Amino acid sequence: MIKSNKKPSFALVLCGLVAAPPALAQPDLYGKLSLSLDNSRDANGDKIWSLQDQASRLGVKGKVELDGDGDLKAVYQYEVSMNPSRSGKPLFGLRNSFAGLEGGFGQLIGGTFDTPFKTAQGKVDLFNDTSLDITSYLAGEVRHDQSVQYTTPEMGGLTAKIDWMPAQNAADDDGLSAALSYKRDALEMAVAATQKVAGDGGIVTDKADPLDAVRVMVSLAATESLKLGVMAQQAEGVDANKSRETGWLVSAAYSLDRVTLKAQAGQGLADKDAAGNASDAKQEQMALGVDYKLAKNVTAFSYAGVMRNSDGADGTAVDETRSDYNVGLGLSLSF
Image (cartoon, rainbow, N blue to C red; front, side, top):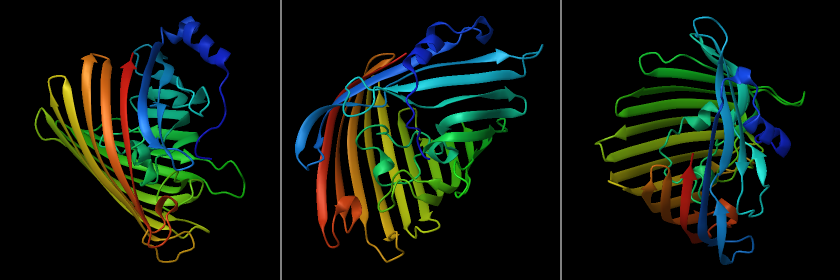
């Protein structure tokens, strides 16, 4: 299963945040509230204005020393999504939550969290969590609800992650996701692969269908003000699904004092549909945005994007092309 649909007990969350045992050594409380007023198409195809949540969350995390020199620690995090706008979503939902051990050997955790394939995107998706998120045309943006992950110590800028996702049904195969990343000074790179993990997005692939996929990402701070990013990937269906999709993304952000200007373009293309037949389904997306820091942890933002779907993408028919736009204006507060 890709994402947990379990609704955590609100009482359990509240108790964990305000009444943590002393042994947990003052856990950190953190969160984000982010809302936008969007003009986009509803389920009936009509353009409407609506208040949208942008991945608001509330969490508690911490570490507990387990030996005398402090090298071995127990680590934990419990995070829930919040939806202040109540726009057709549950008020609370499980996000990245885990428990495990950390030390000189690296980190070993179990729980619900983003796969290494997903986190390999770094920060090149400048419109993450908005209506212009790359999920609509790039498969693999998965938070899995039954995962065991090992992360190596950082070694000269290199870090490796491997995530084992045991199948919850005897008839299904276990899933695997792994990534190797490098970060040093202005350069960040990652290569990731996932095997038999449901894709949760893409052009023609059903969200529940397992995929094999490969992703490459490069991010460069060209100057103190200019950051550039590029990502490319390929995904193929396994078992009964015969689809094959490729996609890419390029982005640029320029910061000057409190203002950040953002531009992004991407495309997803399916050359085989789920039955293995030739396909030309495609989605193209271009987006522009402006962020303005009102305070250290408060940002006002706006964005506008154009999406072009054709030949089977987003419900279009063969030889049909449909263009659409989304605009939004919002405010994000973090603590």
